[in-house]
Amino acid sequence: MERDGALRDHVLYLLRGGGAHLSFDEAVADLPPELRGRRPEGVPHTPWRLLEHIRIAQRDILDFIRDPAYVSPDWPEGYWPEGDAPPGGGAWDASVEAFRQDLKAVQDLVSDPATDLFAPIPHGDGQTVLREALLVADHNAYHLGQLVVVRRALGAWPRA
Image (cartoon, rainbow, N blue to C red):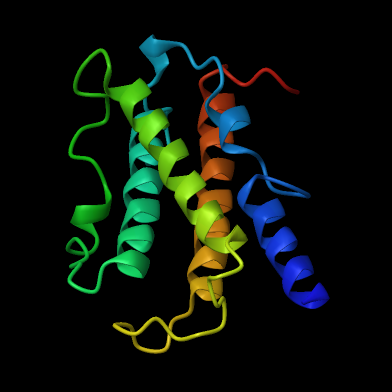
């Protein structure tokens, strides 16, 4: 039980942006609305595209864990938004909130002692909740790092 709790705590630490990981809230904080759809020269993404991508991918993983009938979007087009900019005034905030809710749901699964982190997901091909939670942490960390690079290129990252 002691090791189980330590493992859960470590995975939660990663999901929350601990250690070398950047937290989601740090990455999206105070980004001016007029820059959310801007693509810096030589960079393939805008802040909006990165935000929506990590939201879609995280939700895909969460739905896969919880729903045996779930079907993932087509790769790669189903994992990226169509446009460079949020489609409306509230789209950015809605995406941020949806990301936070889904991240909390992943964290709740990991922290629940009734969740067997090592049991294969019945409708999967050997995946476990532990593997999927680590995939969320890893994928989010990668793209949040990209978001920082885009923000720096746009002059919208507050740190040197």
